Length: 373
Ligand SMILES: [Zn+2]
Image (cartoon, rainbow, N blue to C red):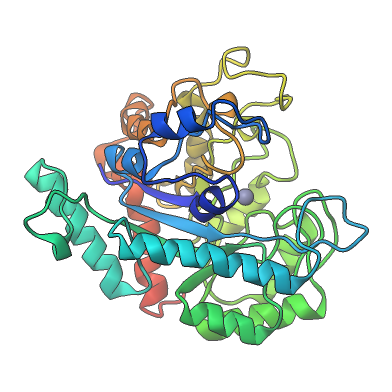
């Protein structure tokens, strides 16, 4: 079954962790086996061959670069200009993957449907999909990606938002971790201020999707009040199941459903089970399995009264690896186990299809047709 993953940091992994994502996962892990600079070294779960093996033919892929003031202890760039330049480097990697036929940028209804046709041909043929442009060769099908900006600090001015839109940017999360220029993120507090309001106005003008993931509560409510375009939460789980302000409260989930949003459930361990301590708790000690992801999916479906507002936003390459994922996930290809688990939880085939990809595809089709909920 086609899987839509609404949150991956592919370029960050290529450009900051120095991972050649075109390689098999074992080769990437092997090459990192002696590195200790990051907690997920030798344990990465995401690469392009594994995405294909799991049927992840479409994803939302980020540009991400934080700006930090001298008072901010988080890692980040010391000026928005440096952060902008970093996101442009990430874009250059996406472009080289496009040139190699590994990725294809999805920016509108036409490119969305081309990508869906490519992957449904694969499903019907029972063979690995071939690039339309590479008939006669064994090159595997390109994975479609929708470009999203996680944290907007790198936008030096609103003119840079316009430039980014022209480069194919289609969604923006105004904040990431900590205080931001345009909104306050996870672990920070406060509203969005004048610059945040100006950004939202400009995003509406370009029909950009607002990603509410990472907005702190105050910024969340202020933002959704001001912004009249389409919104989603690309990688967020349920606060009712795992208490933390990074998670969505039931009130926020209800509100998002009312705006016809889709919420992508994430596979980061601490967002799935309570009391996870980074570096101490292990997937085995917490008895963490994909079944817990199904619990978060089900919680959103119970609030909605249907299965139309939830999908996957795995975040599987968001700075962690196997040490912080469900124990039945070795690579991202294991997302393909979720349909069976949903079936076991009582979900019908049509609902499973919506959760695996249908909801996000419907959302994009509507957003790019100019529909307003
Ligand atoms: Zn994130």
